[in-house]
Length: 409
Image (cartoon, rainbow, N blue to C red; front, side, top):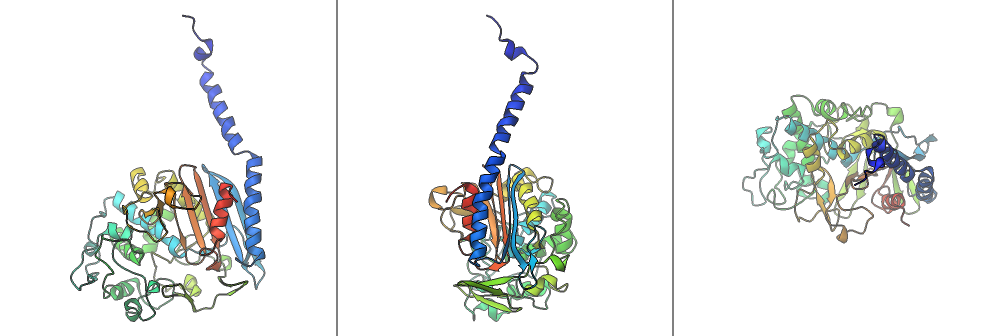
């Protein structure tokens, strides 16, 4: 049988590799990038023109390549300071994935187990069950938000969290992290741990566990295990350069106004209290669930590290577990079809979700107007940071950006 000279040529593999590279470059061709730019630019222009947002930074990476980056509008409108890609944003609940990753890194190192009771590290943290009986909360239940804890902003203004003067991590009470958690421990759980999903202050408790297990303060452990190795030099529990910190705004119908130093915002369940100066207060306790400040570029580094399997911060199997549904069929606040991993929401059933995200996508957002999402099947990472609430996240803006990225109208 005659041989195929093509198959025997030593340079065949090289030729195939070149072909694959050419096809890859074709997929990421300038014309495709130009179409992406046109679509997303149009969304940003509309949002600025309508005053839906005052300023924004949007970054998009595809298989590790930055294919879109824009800073638009103002970081401080009154001073005429333009938004820039190195603007610092208050991350609010986008702090949760980073602090969760620190806890998982400690688990990888054998310094804690996800099935450890919280009392191994915080013996005094013993909130009672709804019936007043003793409860056992594990680190895992904190990470996947099934602990039974709650947030004050999810209760009525005279609810038990408010009565106990528990901070949600967005105000600037002059208390320590331990003092806040001791107050939290006096409030009965909303349900028995592990039986339901409920968004809560659990990641603040994770932060205290991380500090104890890591043998240092929470900021030091997070820097050592996550932000330091990933060169996230602008991400910390206080703004490292106040001149680059964004000024927050509140959207009201067809106008936006600067956020007050003590801003109380109705949210449909209760009241969210914002005190933006917290990001500049060296005495503010480090809130694992809401306290970090950082840039869009830093956050993209974190997203890519998880997408690539931990990138030296976490073991590949740990990064995979973090970004995989860990709560079964429990109802998650994001909406139908969504589950929750460790610190991030995960889309488990695309047929029940109307967004452009694909099954397996994961992400989260922050109350100051920020959001991120990762589509691992497409190799897509998207981070959207604004300085405007609630429109920067709770209105259609982030979904409009996502639709434009996916090429949808």
